[in-house]
Length: 185
Image 1 (cartoon, rainbow, N blue to C red):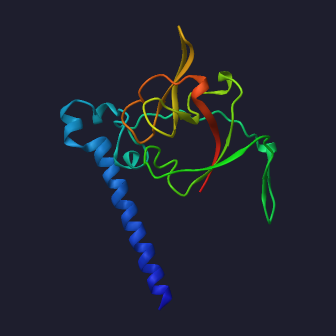
Image 2 (image 1 turned 90 degrees about the horizontal axis):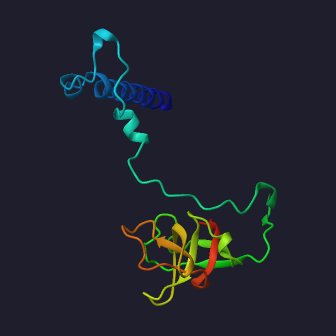
């Protein structure tokens, strides 16, 4: 009886894959809107139009969020049967409140490894940093989206990954408390 369920599942998977393949061919080559716009000329054997159904399952039209600087190299991480060791001097541990501004990267219950930077040269676009804001009480943890210099010196512009707008004002190095170097879920 178990074999019949297996066969049914295999047949269903095969039929589903044929349907998805057919939808991809239709959406990239034979869709009426593509033909009417002159995007496909079957007689001249042109390549299919980009952006078919299967591609849409795996490619999202979202803004690219820069990645943090790579501060922990592979040779600094040792995984044993009973523990994990990360060789990084002066690391600190942090937890987070439930603000949703950095979802899904950081949420309540996540743990982070952070360190205190010694100079602005250690802050990269893409880093996630905690800082004091003059516009909000407490410490904010957001991503660096821009760095630069103005008449007052070095600054960073911050933004939560799950927030539509940049944080108000420029953040100076003396406001930055820590830089995240690892998130543990």
